[in-house]
Image (tube, rainbow over all chains, first blue to last red; front, side):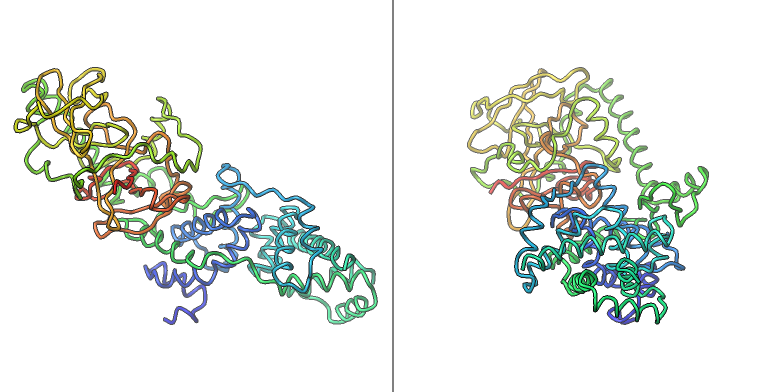
Length: 182
Length: 358
């Protein structure tokens, strides 16, 4: 099997049979997304990396519990979200507080600057209502459909659709401050 | 079509949700003529082209080190129970086994069989020790066999000294409660050992292992360098014992129990990365007690060492080497529970902490 080109389902099946290289391919493929997800929750690199490591260890231990009728991304999203929430509940990690003035100061910068834009987007993501951010992460980061996100979040599809829309409007409003101030 | 509806349609189209073509065209036309919707589209487009925050490039390697260590453990890995937390109301992808099934599965699990064998061995050792104490006296129990004198590995260079509680240099987590209840909790979190405990004492925060009696040691060459609290191998409460030795070389210490013998203990060390590390421990007050993490240190809650340590590698002996998440291995290293018996940690079921001495 070519691990680089194999799809997630094939890699999961191989990993279940003890192929650690297949699991490594899954880890390398999905680490950026899980990290971005965790970073938007904790706002801090170390906490996000700890969460990612815990997520993949849990995934590895639970490969037998993976329902092949679901997409790996859906399952991964659920594990990642639950892991981050567990870390928050247990007090092991706390999100870095956000000062609204920080967001304004950042977005008031040069929007043509990718770094400034990225920083402002991440701050705005973290400032969002958690339910809205969860839904947007599921759809925009993990590429889940509204129905898959609804299943993972335990809410109706319509609720996911409205949360994602609300999240985008929130982002747009935050970023549009820059346009008005430019 | 109003602004909210137009933006909602655009948002759904971005998410590849089914949207009527005609409705989408109407929404697009609206967005080109309305300042608010234009701003919305531009902002959403900006977020789409923004690069994601990137983790450290070594993160996948670190994850795989933990996973490979997990896979190397007997009967762990993909067949282990699903530990993934689920929210109330979420369905689990696996059905819950009955109590009988869980018991049978546990008994089939080689790790549990090993643990049961360990407990059985420990029980047998306890019975033998009790009988020996009754019939033979303390001295014959305390004097080790010849091969025990080989257990300290790595050795201490001339002039090597034990460093103090250097762990306090990087207090990354709340202090662990070492009251009676705290100790009980710590034991609950530890794996039972399959090997018999060595005879240890603690002195200056370091662990020393009994290696021999000191018939060949000239007591006049020793001076009192402190005290240690231990019952040694005798029944009853621990007592304060004079520790004899040489302050310039703390690789060996000597204790003279009330029975008059001079017992010699050797600092437990290991070599890692070309450096020598000494085993640090919470107080050890009796023989049969394993060295454990110093009081100032929190115990990991996960096999991967989180939240205190991060797995660095698996040594050729099979021992799992961890470093502090804050500070790196320069501050010290930890060895995971259940190291091989051949390791300097001697199969200790507790996490152990080692600080560099040179």
